Length: 199
Image 1 (cartoon, one colour):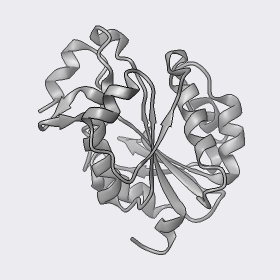
Image 2 (cartoon, one colour):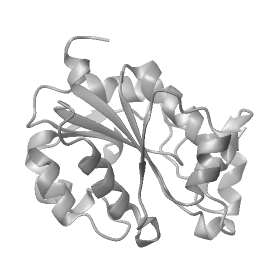
Image 3 (cartoon, one colour):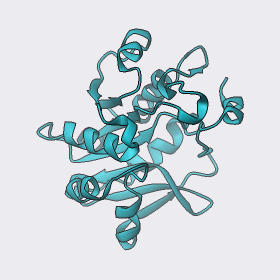
Image 4 (cartoon, helix red, strand yellow):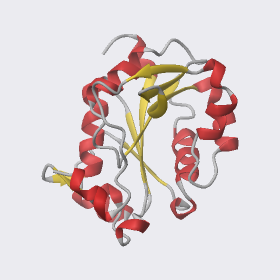
């Protein structure tokens, strides 16, 4: 972990209820024999995030029981049903007073994005003004690095399932895009058909 990376906290959004998956919480979907949330935390750690905050929501108690999340700060979003925006707000709120200068935001339902892609985004961090997004063939995707100077603005604009999208669009001149299409696949696990991506 470089000195720079010490200032960046991994922020994993894992609260979704899997509405289009028959109500199966995404954090608990199995991937390589373990819950998906555990896999996602491992990716963040392998990439260099020493500290990881995990936002839980749907079936939070069951996730705590089944997944090994030792050393993570677990943040419960009681408003998870309102969409990803509420989880992003809860996650950013949990970073207040921790000394973090940036949050590297990843989504639990993107197992095609591994440590190589996360490491590239992390390497583009400069300071609290940093705004960095992974790109897939030039199209903005996750993970996203949000410098602390942007947290209040992101939280104010995050609503429904939009997360930081509106804020990033509004500030696109300030966004550094890091191409990751050669080392990762940015699909989501949203529907029954998408479950084929899990191993």
